[in-house]
Image (tube, rainbow, N blue to C red; front, side):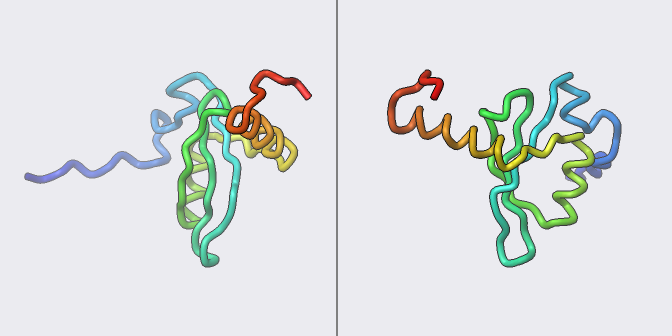
Length: 95
């Protein structure tokens, strides 16, 4: 069985932002061995994300393809705080 070659990552229909009509977000969480970047990727809501690991050049292409908004350190800290409230109790508290 022969597989069809993958679509180019740069095709207009390949953008999650365009396919869904929602903004895409990236939050870099670390690096591995100076070769890989660890990050969270979200569509629509930065609070609901998946963790991914890619080589730096693949990460740059991924971000360009999906037209991402990079979250600031402050926005990342706010997300961490919200997650802590849910993990350790007191969800819904606004302080």
